[in-house]
Image (cartoon, rainbow, N blue to C red; front, side, top):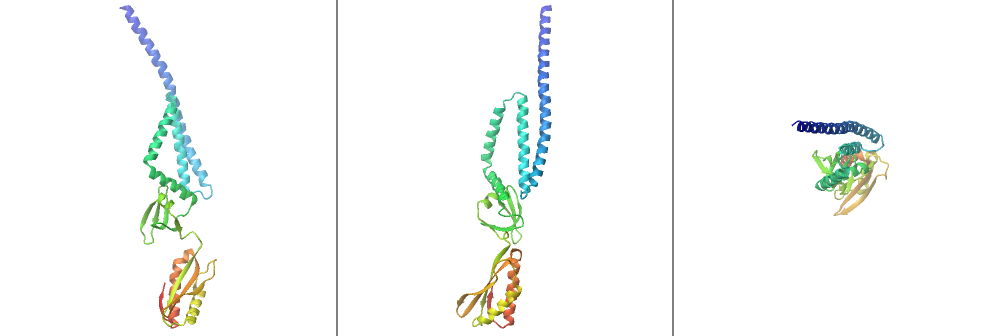
Length: 272
């Protein structure tokens, strides 16, 4: 009986020693893991802030891209820290990386359309075919750019309607940017009434254009006969206008031409 008791005591002592050694070993691993996690989170946050500030100082670099790439850097550091922590407990990091790669591939296939929009958004922000405040036309999408995001672009149509266009749609479609160039050409078509005196009408129109047409660093305004049919003559007024004044200048100049021709008793069929 006494021998059995001694054996139990020795076994208990051996188990306690083993547990103590295990606790010490894993205690250091846990402590090291905690230190790594805290340091990794701090380093990831600092790297995100520094990279964001650095990218913002790069001339022409979009703020959305700076924020996106700085966040990618932060998450990459956090993933690296997580793998290192697992290695502290004897986990095979090669297996973890293989699992992460497989998970990334599965997520990429599941979110293929979304990733296309992200890639298109990055290209739009880098190449800048349009910017906020510019009016564009891309296929069936027309409007003023409100905001360019990583997934979609927000626009406002000329009649005030909100439009959300996926970036992949805008990237894969030819884009007309009506606001990018400093000046645009404008044509005003004046269809004179039957038997209207052409020389007198031209003189009146030339006087209005010379005094009222907007000035742009482009070819001078021109007035020419664009059509003769059924006794009526059509004059085309062609001029270049600063882009900001393009729409308003056409309305104002058309009104002034109509008033001047009416004052000279020259019949006008239409002005467009």
